[in-house]
Length: 507
Length: 117
Image 1: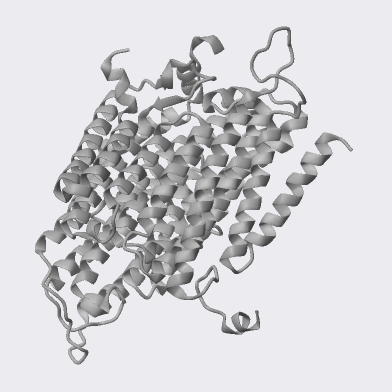
Image 2: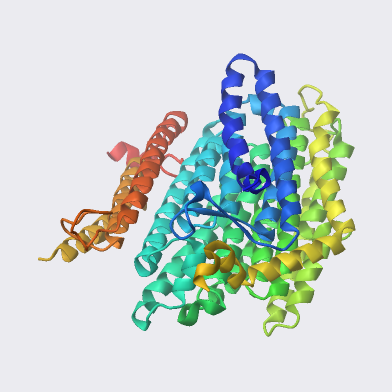
């Protein structure tokens, strides 16, 4: 193995080293710790981009940890899908980290930087692993870090929402373990590629248990993705936590969707015999409900952060609409939308952050206020972020939604998807127009004047960067779509993953 | 009674008790419920490797029948994680109780019930 082969593990190793170093450095010199943390984010982005470049040759690479052969040891798998998710996570992490440092949000608590990197460790690990139990462990790593981050800055509201968030996720972990136990009991393996081989050969007597395991697994992923009716934890948690943390969490719900895209076509795909596509019929109705409830929440929300949280639920719904069709073209559309939705969701939270910092005692409530400094800049950013979030031109949400509509048109239930996507977009536009006019258009000169220090303009950098990224995604839409089509083609060729992980022995 | 019946009914009772307690409104009962649930899950994972008595896990001279060592490793990982999680949720509910003055899971005080007890 050359050094380049070991690069696969870098996205897991870098945060694992940076987190404790930042923790140690913060005790003496805060600036050194912050510099380390930022350098860690940059290094992770560099590693992710390098891996993305390596994955361009369309080969699937397995990296056996400790050099144990595949079904016995744990493998990391690098393909186009994992490389894309790594780049997305690294870009988001860098922008969010810069925003946290500029706004000094990282100083509101003790361990923002170490927790942030442990969160990234969990995320990157979940994207790379080729083993279901290892996926559980990385889910736990990212959840444990997210509990700490969610409570960052503290306060009674955050603690109350935190208890519910932790309890829901512990129950989710219990379900995950039961599903893993069932799968292991049936097949004797937890390696994803090995599972794909063995699930197909199960006897008729085991099919019932296999279906239960598949549905339980998808239930857990749906809980992480906040799919209706398992979404109730999300709006409260995301609205109560610090906006900069919520911006990073924008990718956490999409980890659940990623896990579905990773696991279902591979293990419960066409090759699974009687258990093929067991979870599929449940997902489309859930996706429709999620999109409708999410976008209706935008209309009903009373504060900016609550609205952004519902926008994230709605985007997961739209995303699942495309995922639940389970064809290569719709999955390519879903992946295009996934990249867009993560950045747009994060942008909404960062804009809410910079706006509420300028509104003093009014916070992020959707009520008119007297004029405040920076209202125009914040208003423009809000306009751009919401245009991105609902999917209007010229930003990338429009291209991605168009791609979803176009790719689903050939399918029998196309009108359900079209009606949901178009209807929810309209509801979203009305909701955001209403709140935008309350926040930035109307003014209430008679109300109490806003008190508070003048905020630096540098705070606008991070949200503007995210919106610039959305614009870039539109400009490079042709390239992005081609990338995602190649990625989806790999997802729907499970035999290639199996061959890459298990080697020639299985053929 | 067989070992299978004993283990299966233990898992069932623990799960039922765990779900009942986890659905209660107060944090202490919820924490207990989550703990019972994690015991049930751990037992279940352990049983997944099939129930065997008096067998070596990997290798012993002259023995052909082995117990599956992997579920035991999985259970160990699960125990460590749930232990940490339980500690966290205990501290969290304590802080939430001290800050909001209520031990309800939703954080909203229920004065009638608090006085009655």
